[in-house]
Image 1 (spheres, rainbow, N blue to C red):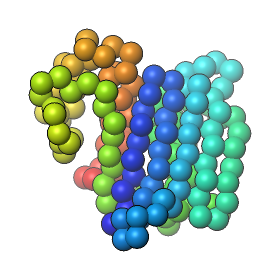
Image 2 (cartoon, rainbow, N blue to C red):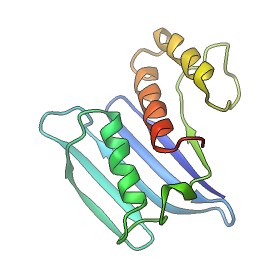
Image 3 (cartoon, rainbow, N blue to C red):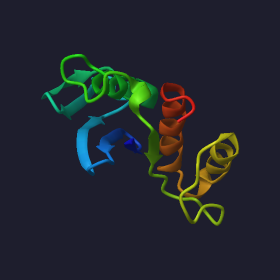
Length: 141
């Protein structure tokens, strides 16, 4: 089982892909300065190499596109297809009284997280942006 863990912050996206068969990290990466006009900085380390550089990441969806591309890259990717990812875990800052344990994300959970944005206005909106982008890249996961 391969689990992708995402931390979608206000201006960054951190990710790590784990192979739960042996608990090792297969890949990790970071996109910083999301939304900056001058460009974002990106780093990726996979089983066959590392890369770093500047990319255009006007929003979290673009940062997730970078992540997805790196994970399934022919040269440095950790998977041959994104279909190999079995689960995606997200860090959400504030779940209010509605979420005190991990919860599978569906439309109702997504809506509830959105309703809690006033409790963590700097963190929950980008957490939610990461969730929404990941749901597009990993449908059904």
